Length: 232
Ligand code: CA
Image 1: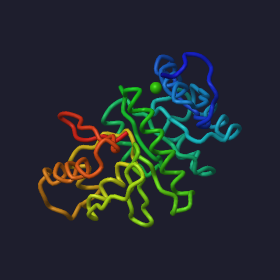
Image 2: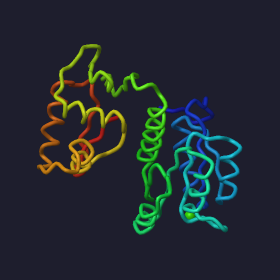
Image 3: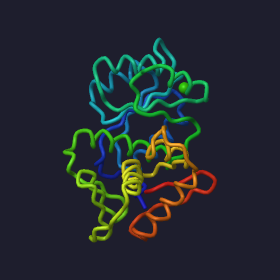
């Protein structure tokens, strides 16, 4: 359990640009509990100032913001000077369509209402991806007590090397790169098997079963009923 009061900030600073105070407070709480320092702005201008001053590790923009710039314009503005990871927060599906239609350079999108778990998982996954972009490629990833070495294509569970097929390895690596995110079977097919692959979603279940059989309790791979799979 996280302590209820001030704790050491170890995970970096996040700027949250959100005009809805209730949502801003919730996001603030979730992210602080996850160990981040959170700075709030309720309009885009102030948000961009904060980003320039504080050099955060991540920025969240609500789309509907008061003032001359909305979240989309603010993201575009930010991209002229910074490649800090950006999460766009959308209130409705049609807003999401607009975001996806524009090439803003945002790193991820989250739709209200979102759960604390989803928010924190997305933020961690983005930071991990951006760190992975900078870290030397030979540094392995860890999920549960499984170590995934993408350079050597080697997997170790509790210290012992485990033999996986190429596809099992790719599926495991995808989970390791995106901890805490729930994927549908179709999303996993698209990401791991590729969009040119025509097959049954049960293929995913078969591979998940193999990963569980080979890695056992070392791998925290959960079935999310009615949705798909999540690895923490
Ligand atoms: Ca808003």
